[in-house]
Length: 90
Image (spheres, rainbow, N blue to C red):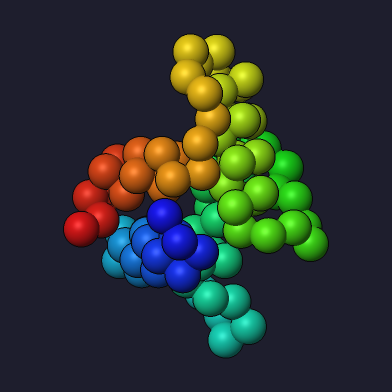
């Protein structure tokens, strides 16, 4: 998936989380940023700062795999797909 497609999917997830009233956004925060903050906070993982989106998503996937002892290879695109399915983002 391209960087712009990943960002769009994360943004769509943020919009959905906002609709579900799971996140609120301020003028300084984007829907994408709110979604990433929510996912890291929800799963009690530390969000990395100053790294590209792909690395952030990879660290989220790695953190989830370790925390929940999941038998899969962490992948940035699969973690986006998982959360989009979970929160019914189309």
